Structures are given as structure tokens and as C-alpha cells.
Length: 507
Image 1 (cartoon, one colour):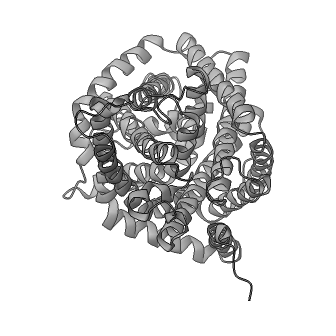
Image 2 (tube, rainbow, N blue to C red):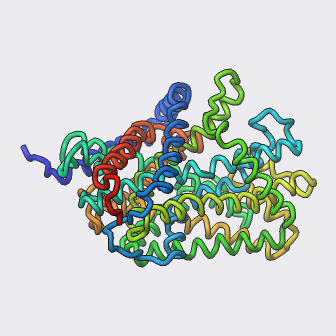
Image 3 (cartoon, rainbow, N blue to C red):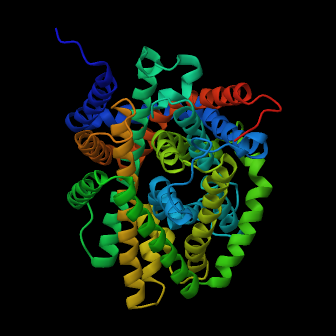
């Protein structure tokens, strides 16, 4: 009997698990759908509190690091310098992490909460509009960025200072030792990270395919359905898999910069030609409401409010689990591109700047849509009830900008595609790295395999339940990995205190 090579165990087990899920979904879509629904209901009911607690821990952890003496440490060796400029770095950070979700939910989420207010306001009222924006800010504020930033710091320290391999099992270096990634527990950690990354990216690929299909319908009149979605998925999968092999310094860096430019361009155009005053007032008012309610909302699980608890499961808990599922690949990617930056500057750039950028995006796009809805310019809520992804394109159609409105809608389709390609690029790179014992330049054939598998899983999820199945995949994948993330924060703090006792020079 042939014994598996040690460095192929994580790859083979992860491949088999993902392949089994894909085949199960294809041959028994009904059973697959009912199974995911059961898991979704179970996790929301019994583990929703855990997801909220975990994200709160990350925020507190980063605040402690930023204001402590450890904030002067560098991501990498003491004398390392940043490899990328601030603009290129931020473009890759933003594009590889949240770009697809921002475009998908930027209009749809505020309008959804406006029509079905989470905090008890009258649907369609001014209070409902304010609450809708506050809920959106909360979901895209400090908490999601905290999960990425916290794990990137942990990974960077153990990987670059302690010379551990670029694997999630390196987060447990103090527990497992220098060769811990070859232990049973180390392999299990890396398998969980691989599955969480695959499921999290499959979710985002599915969301992007839904929105691209919706955009093509509203902008160009093309059909919407399973056939066009499969064609879009195959095209996108080919592009992101092909471009992934060009590496970070070329393909991903270029796409990150292009994403940043297109997102900025669309935001400025809508700021100029949309209800500018309403957008600015929305940003200032909702930012204040966000911070005023931050602590209460961060811990609110509604034990006595069934309606709000149901909303939490479909929105907040889903989001928190989605961010955790994305963390293995985003944090590894951030650690890879952030060498040379101090922990304090990294936290500012990866936590505070993206948070404010999300606030601006929702104020411009969500604020415009709400203004149009409340002034009777367009009934966007009617569209998003049947197709959440259609909100931004219906908004463009009703801006009365003629050719410019159609052009902005077309550019938005391009932006969704490039955001997705950037995320999937980074994910295929990281998945290949995870399954080759942390090689910083993994083989191209591994990237190809994972690129195809992510697309296949996204298709199965779309085939068997659309958005609900996508949500379930994220929540299931995030559960076990969240425990590893908490342990990583603990081990990093313990290691820092040991390596730099009081009075020791920090550099």
C-alpha cells in the first residue's frame, strides 16, 4: 500500500471533502438543500451568541495591540520595509476582502431594512430609513475588518518572526511547536482553514454571479436564470484561475489598483449627480448613530424578541460567520502583502480606513436609493424583494441621467467582475499555499485545481438554494475555525509578553 506523502495529506483530504460536497449537491440537490437548511437553523439557534462574542473579542484585541507598546513592532523582520505603496496595498486589501459584498449589498441591504425595519420602526418611515443605514453600517464597520486584521497580525508574527510556514496551523505555534503543522492537530487546522476558505469564496462567487446576471438583464436586456449564471460562472472562473498564476506583484496588484479606481470613479459620479446633500447628511448622521449604539448592538442577541432574533440570524449572524469564513485566506493574503508595516499603522490602515470607506460607500449608494424611494422617484424596494442584486441597477435606471446612467451601470458590472476576480485570485493563491505546506510561491497546478473546485461548489450552492444555501455554507465553515482564531490571539499575546518583557526594546 502506498503511503501518502506528508506534505500532500492536507491537500488530498481537503480535495476529497470538497469534491464529495460538490458531487452530493449535483446528484441529490434536494437532500443537499434540506441538509444545509437544518445546519443553518441549528447553528443560528445554538451558536449565534458565539459568533457575536468572537468578533467582539477581535475588536478589543486590536485596540489593546494598537495602544500598547507592541504597536511599534513590524509585520516581518525588525528592519523590513513595505513592499507595496499605500495605494497599491489598500487596493489589494479592499479588493481581495469585501469588494464583491459591498457592491452586492450597497443598495439592496439598506432598502431591505427600510421595508422591513429590524428595530421596530414603522416600515417606510424616516426612522426606518435611519435604522436601515445604521444596521448596514454595523454589518460593514469595525467588526468584519477586525477579524481579518487580528489574524493577519498573528500570522505575520509567527510566520516572519518565528519562521513558521505560511499556514493557519502556525497560529498555534506555541502549542504545536515548529513542526506542528505535520501533527494531526496541525493538519486538522489547515484542513479546516482550507474548507472555510473554499466555502467562503464559493459564497462570494455565487453572490457576484447573481449580481452580474442581474446587471446584464437591467443594462443590456439579457436573460436571467440558471443557464446564463452558469455561463457567467465559467467565464469568471477561467479568468480568475488564469490570472492567479501571474502572481501577486502583477495580476493581483494590477486588479487591486483598477478596482480602487473604478469604485472611486463610480462613487464620485454618484456623489456629483445624485442627491449630494442627502448623502453627506446620511454619512454624518449614521456615523454618529453607529458609535452611539455600537456596544449595545454588538452584544444584543434579543433573547425575548423573536422577530429581531430571526433578523439577527439572517443578517448579523450570517455576516459575522461570513467574515470568519473569509478570514483564513484574507488574513494570510494581508500578512503576505503587509511586511514592513508596524502593527499600529497596519491596524489603522486595515481596520479604520476600510471601515470609513464602507461608511462612505453605503452613504452614497444606499443613501441615494433611500432618497429616491422616499421621494417617490423610484420603487426600488419592489425590485429587491424578488432580486436583492438588482437594487443598484434599478437605481441607475431611475437617475434620469440618460446615457451616463447606463454607462455607470455597465461599469458597475465590470467592477463586480474585477472585485470577484481579485478575491478569487487571492483565494486560489492562498489555497494552493495551504495545501503545499505554506510555500510562498505554490505550484500553478494547485491553483488551477482550487480555482475549478471553488467554481464548482459555487454552482452547486446556486443550484440547490441560491442565497440561503450560500449563507449556510459560510456559517457552517466558520464555526470550528472561530475557535482557532481565539486561541491564536491568546498565543500571540503570551508570546509577545515573553519575547518583549517590560523594559525590553521593541523593534
